[in-house]
Image 1 (cartoon, rainbow, N blue to C red):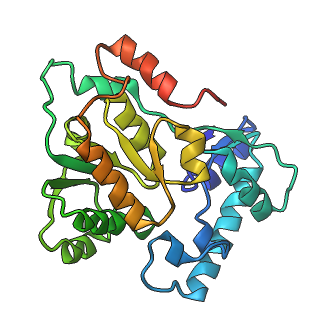
Image 2: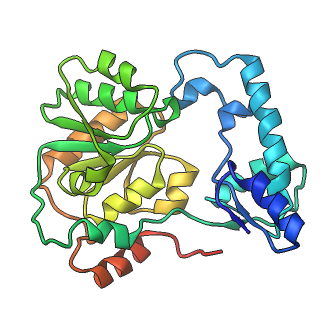
Length: 275
């Protein structure tokens, strides 16, 4: 029985017990601001999260983590998350494997099988759910600081959309369908992915430069293939965007040629560690 998210781990555990079969469970990470480890203000929240809301999350997550800890094989999406999970389940010596995020070569190349040429446009793209900890509002502010005259593509949906519309002023923001994600990434000057390693790897595979906030997670997965700026420094983010925009547009070594080549390229762009 395989569970690949916290939403299915309890049911997967119950099935494994009922039929006496092995159980594999994966949980990506634990949001540290919801378990009193870091401030929510460091993760893009404008308002303080009520104490009881955090406590309810802790109770719920401890319950899910208990089922996860009883799996025959357990994994998380990066090694840097393991210690906090061990602390949550009270098992300091717990063996945890790593299942790093990866770009899907087959899905990426399927978009380009018709051979249509993707032209470089004066656009910057962010692919993300519209949630506070994704800090898309930082991207908007950074682009305003440099008087960016292009288009900011936002691929995703979520509760923060109204905030982005309120902040944008003269910045041209376009909301793009998930169906057009890869073509949009490929035609953009930059992809900004402040907390999403999968999107960063997809952009690398499509030859588009990536900027992110510096974190253990992004460095573990993406290594030195992308540009890092100091975490939560909007001014550094703006400076880095301006620097890349001023350079002659060029593709990274991860440019699509054919499916087999891209599959190898994505393999080099992603982690080698496997469960």
